[in-house]
Structures are given as C-alpha cells and as structure tokens.
Image (cartoon, rainbow, N blue to C red; front, side, top):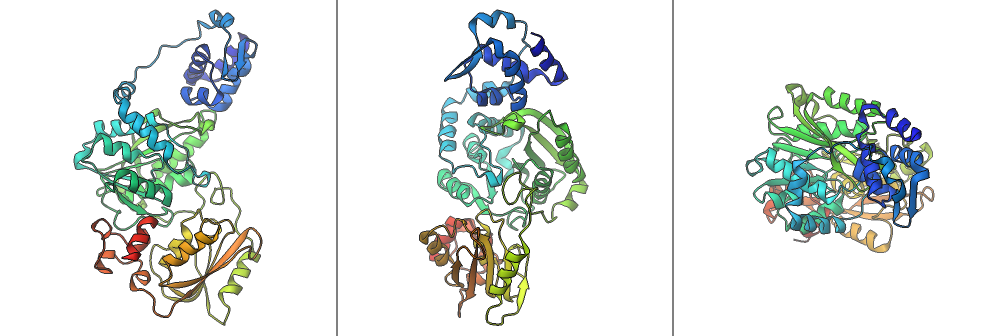
Length: 474
C-alpha cells in the first residue's frame, strides 16, 4: 500500500476527492472521465491513484475497477460522507431533471473558442433550486451573463414568476433559448468585451455567470455583472469558478482580480458545479457568492481585453495579426482613393461616419462580422476575417448575411485573401440606406413603429440574430 499512501499524503488536507476515487473503483467499473467528474479530483491526481493501484486493478471495455480479490485490502481507505440537502432536493424532481437532460442534450454543441464546457443536468437543477431557496426570485430580476448551460430554463421551471434575462455572445444559444422557453425569457446579444446593452445595465438584482476561468475573463464578467446591478451594494453576483488544487496560484490570481473590483466573498461553495469535461480542474467548480462594495460601482464600465479565453484566437496566449495582412486590408479599403480610418472592433456606440474603415476581425468567434456591419456607418468597410468564418463557408451563408444588410451595404466576399487562412469582406454603402440599419445604436422604439414589445428597449445591434431576420422583414 506504500505507493497509494504516498499519493494520499502528497495531497495533504485536500485529500477527500482521492478517497472518493477509491470508493468509485470499489463499485466500478468506471471510465476515467467518470472518476474525475464524480470525485471532483483533477485528472492528473486520478491518474496518480490509478498508477498506485495498478497491480490490483481490473480493466475491461466498461472501464476500470479494483479487482474483487483485492477489495478487502482497501476497506480502511474510507472517509465519512458529507450530507448534502441539495442532492435530496434534486432527487425529488426526477421529471424536471429528465426534461433538463433532454434540453441540454439538444443545445448547440459547445464552442471550445468560447471556453464552453457543459454543466451536468444535476448541476443546472442544483443552481435553480439553490437560487430559489436563497433569494425571492418572484420579486428579483435575474440576469445571466452567458447561458450555454441553460440554467435560465431550470430557474423558469422552478420559479415561473421570475423575471429572467440572458445576454450571450453565441447566437445559437439565444435562438435555442427563445424556442425552448416559448419566448418567456428576455434575450439580448452582446460581447461583454464590447459592453452591456443599455437596456440591461443597471436593472438586475442578481447576476449569475459561468465565465472563462482566466483572471482576465473572470474580472471582465464580474465587472459587467456589477454594471448590470440596479444597486450594486444591495445585489449579488454569483460566479462559477474552478481551479486545480495542484495549482492554487491560479485561484489566488482570480480571487485577487475579484477583490480588486470591490467584491466581497459572502460564500464559496466548494464543488457546487459539475461538468462533462474540464478534467484539469476535476470537472468541477465552486460557486462564488459575491456582494459588491461601493468601490465596485466604479469598475463596472471598464473596457475588456480581447484575450480572455483559454483556447482559440482570443486566448490569453494567442499571437496578434501579422502586419502584412493588415497592410493588404488597408489597400483594399482605400481602393478608389477613399480616405482610410482604422478602428478597433467596437460596435457599442456610433462614431463619426467614416469614408473607408478597416477592421481586424481575425479573432471573430462568429457574431462580430454582422454586428460590425450593423454598428458601423461608412462609405466602405473592409473587414479581415478567418477564411472559415461561419458567414462565409458556403453560398447559403453568404446569401443570408447579404440579405440581412442589403438595405445598407453591398457585400463582396474575397475568400483566401490575403492568404489561404483569411478572407476580406468589403461592404459598400447603398445609395438610400434603411433608417433602421443606419441608426443601429438608437432604441428601437424611437426608430421603428412596428416593433415587438419585448424588443422596444433594445438597440438593433443588441437584437439576437434570429429575431433580426423577423424584425427587418416587417
């Protein structure tokens, strides 16, 4: 047993998850992913246990377990279980849990570039039950900053009277929530690095989010959450966050980032959230319950960095765009002698109408291209995007984008330009553009008479894409 004892001793006081691994191996067989998710131990720690037990393990297509002959030798490797009333509460709603599992199975696939990792149905229901028990959701406005996990649907089921709003960068999630909820949840599109929609800012009592687990991502989402609160010192910000106990310095960085914003930690509920993935952090994350201080009010409106994710072109380790690509972009923008204006990606507010505007959208996760076309007024736009951008992948995608902005711009798609990994989209203003498209930063109620009631407070740049199609066809 020396090897196993050495592994357990190396984990110090935080060894409980490894005892859970041993318990799971007693009742196996279990796959590695299940051992991580059910124990909340980091994958590397689980692998250390498996290596220490190798001589007594039995492997099969179904997974791994301690062989029956060796079980008596591991009877002393037990700790008493911690009772959790929420587990009983979740178990008391089998029909709702089954419904949530079906909805989660049908949600659009996670996007690694947005750090999506799907929470389990049990976690989503735990969140809803905990929120309903802790706060009076019948009299509170609850905002979700991103909701690929569909926690809003669980809260809607648990508390039908709750006033719920979801803002998300992923257009697919917004469309799915709209269809699945029967349009009972207020939805708006945003990229939190650009800013909150004005219709959302300063209105919420509670904000829930499962942000990217980088200090930059956690800090930005927390700052936007504070900005969204009606009265920050009276509201609460609830954040999922997980880090590996093997790397506590990462947790310290994030906690410093939150504290610097002026957030106090009212509670940190360990391993509250479980995931189908994220094995490096034990497929688990804590729930941070934060109360903003008066200092936090000053931090909410800050601009966000582009690099907040752990994967893809917007990751904190991603390199910038090569100067040669930007030079080619500017050349195309100024064809015909147009005066050039280079702008950063930002459609949150209307600037002066430009002659020729060039923008680098190489880190676009999908929605930036359309939002830039809606939110920028210029004689010509030249936009550098990935060659595999979802709006460029085939003729149908290009036609759909062209039709959406046809009353404002004529589009040209220059695939594999300037190189085979990039494309340039040019947009030339039409002679008599639509007013609603050129006033994309105005409240819709002030621009168009025939607008659905749930959209009147939004700006055109905030409207989910699937609703844009309906709105512009009216």
